[in-house]
Length: 109
Image 1 (cartoon, helix red, strand yellow):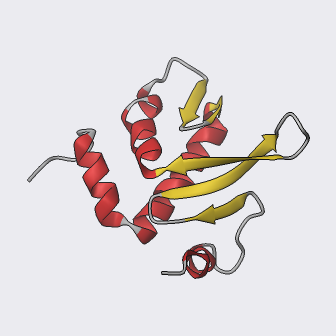
Image 2: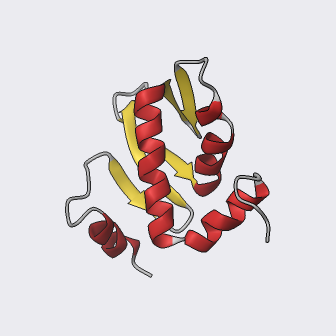
């Protein structure tokens, strides 16, 4: 399966510059620069998104949130988490449901 075509469909042929690639269980983004001045590519997994909603999104006391390797202000991280969640719903709803059940986010029937 060609996930570049899926990305084009998902973003309606306007894939943002910070998105470097994606698959069924991950999305790669650019966040800042590494110590050599190049872009830092970070891989956010389906499990990272589920963990974010199970743990971090519920913490209303902290202004800092995490989404796998991405840590920062809750607004930006929450927006990115929603974008990643929408991506996984688009390409792998069954895998998302499985991971969510493991984290007790959705009931087991």
